Length: 268
Ligand SMILES: [Zn+2]
Image (cartoon, rainbow, N blue to C red; front, side, top):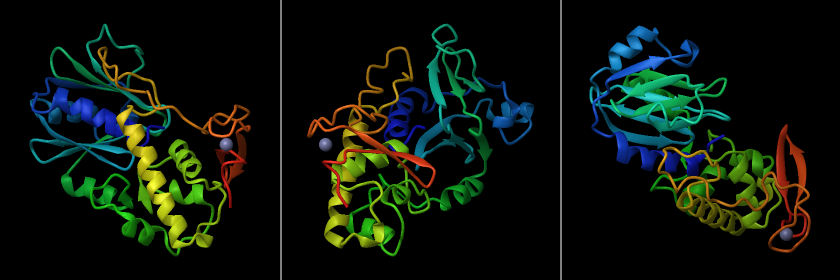
């Protein structure tokens, strides 16, 4: 599933392309992915402009010039493509928003959605999220404040969107590796110093991932050479060699989630 770095990359690239361009029309190929009748969805979007693309946690929130919002959750396997019909790599799209020559194609996973909402309604959905991991106000004190008093495995905490939003399965493992902590470490047993190290590891992994366009190599546009260049150290690499110590990457199940780690580089 796209996490903060992937979505931040999409947000930046897309902002340069669509902001202030009038929407020509919208087409819905899967009614279940929108929240109103398809004809109303199309007529409400016609002639509107996106004035700002926001990302919160693992959601994209397109601000329209009439104050309404398009809230998008891609979910696992979901993607976005911007370009013309000929350039579109997959034809199986669910929602299409046309800006004339170019179209914004949404390929949504099973429970993914594109919801047209009022600012208040979108705000209510976003209010359920913990502070965004990339929020300018996020700092070591706020991070420790958010995780203090929580119990359970480190990975489970990092992916809990109500605590801190934006991190999912991939980056939780990468952050734990960078911090030298096992994903199974009990959060309540971490002292402030370890939490501080964890915070710096989180910032370091995520800023590298943002700079290199994240890990999911699905280009947003034809001329997109930025997306998908982040190199994972442990996630989905069970049995491969750790690049830090040459040991073998291992895998465990934690509360029904896979977690990948290096048993030599990571400790309790
Ligand atoms: Zn190692």
